[in-house]
Amino acid sequence: MVAQQTLSDGSRAGHVEPRADRRRLPQPLPLTLDGLFTSTAGKFPMARAVQEGQHHLFYGEAENRAVQLASALVRGGVQLGDPVIVHCADHRQAVVAQLAVLKAGGVCVPLPSALRGARLDRITEISGARVVLCSTVTRPVWSYRLMSWVLDDPATWSTIAAERPDRSLPRSGHTEAAYLLVSDADRQGVSGYLTDHRAWQQTLAARIRRVGGAHDGVIVHHPPVRTTTLPAMWWAFACGGTLHVPSRYGGATCSPAPKRNAAAVFGLDEYARLLQSLSGASHPDSRRLTVLIGGPCPRTVIDRHFEVLPRAPLWVEFAPADGAMPWTIQEFSPGKPGPEYPGASRPLPGVHVQVVAPDGSPVPTGQTGEVRATGSSLPYAGIRSADGACLAGDTAPLLASGRLGRWRHDGTLEFCDPSTVPSSAARPRNP
Image (cartoon, rainbow, N blue to C red):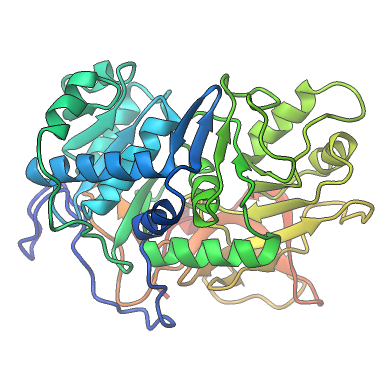
């Protein structure tokens, strides 16, 4: 449970209690996210985990630094289930920070590097975090808020390296919380979503089965730590690939260029802006496919994609709520026209999608209702902003998308116009 005060059961403020397995899920995957990275680093220590412009981070280097940092976090008082904010301006720093938090058994609270102002106070209140891992350029905004560790300060690593690694590492478990993702939209007081290691692993496995591995890497065009960065990052790491990031975010290519078969992951809005900035009928970017997270995707973006990359499939993942865990998937292939409006998507494994009336009852096929979902590949709990209390019950919450849709007779889900449903319905509910 997450809270900003001592709860009635005596649990400590700002802490995610290790939870019992109450969701009757299939046999869990054996590795945590940090365990997955450790496995890859052990096999390919000199492979590049991150290529950021002209700079790079090797798997073995990231693993060693993460162990050092995790040990320091544990000695500094971070306990199993404690939320830790990651607010880095550099992808390499952000990767090490996230790995360290997970190895320490903590819960990552990733924040975009450009985030400033009152929203930081709100996120601090929601999460209950007392520690932030940051960069020199993001450190000033935390000067009066939390204890900060500056990861691009040599003095920080000099202090950390002087201590021996903690023998209790790693402390994370695959059924424990891995991320607290704070939502941009406060829906009826629900401001964040908790996801465990297992949900991320199931989502990764489903993506690899669906679109293939990422051995040649994944391209992203945005700064850390966005919700669209996380799926791209773990997809690359699960396959021993490289996360490719341009030296200047928003550019059309990475430098040095990634391999020809690299995939790319974008948010819908940023991809639309990138396509608008490209001139000519084609583009030298040789990525093998593009995954859009957020959806549904307008027809204009789909058409422009195939003008620019005529041979690259486009996969659109509808991912409301936390913005990283997809509910449904839709493929657009070269030479195969899709529907006039984005729809005909199919639920992903581990996701149970419903279309319901305002009273929560299912609507018949062909009729419009709000799209909701629950499942083992989705967040297992919502967090209220008012008191930080966890909304998880004995079953996984029923998450509301705030989008209208209807089931088609072929068993696919079609999203309607982008109108939202009344706010009273847009909140996690226990079925």
